[in-house]
Amino acid sequence: MENVVEIKKEFSGTGKIQKVITDLAKGLSEAKISPEDLTNPVSFQLAFSRLYDALMKAMEEGGHSYVAEVSFTDDLGNPVVFAVDLGKEAPAFASKKVKARVIVQLYEEY
Image (cartoon, rainbow, N blue to C red; front, side, top):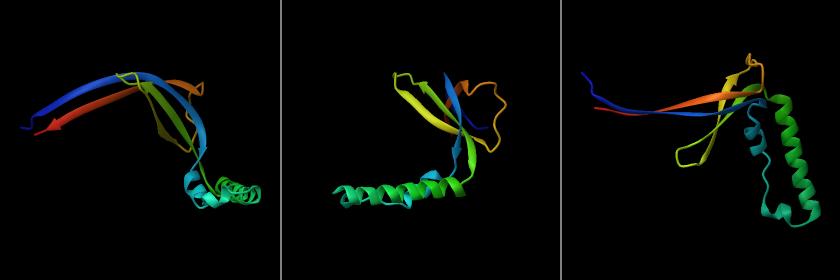
């Protein structure tokens, strides 16, 4: 028989549901900006154009997904924020702002 030591902690917080473009970061990573791009207005405009093109391409080609931005305050008073992918269909909540319950389970098996 296995012995398990565990501690469970529950936090209450909020969630904000939003529709996001998937793979946006991947699309934007293709547009590189270097320090030289910030040396004069023309270089900056060219760099901004590359970013804009990459953003438009990501928006056109990328799919969409619904994400909940979950936030709560930990035991030391620090804000904690993370995302939960809810899938491609809009969840059936009446509001975009919902309550969240975060359960942390620490355990050791031996």
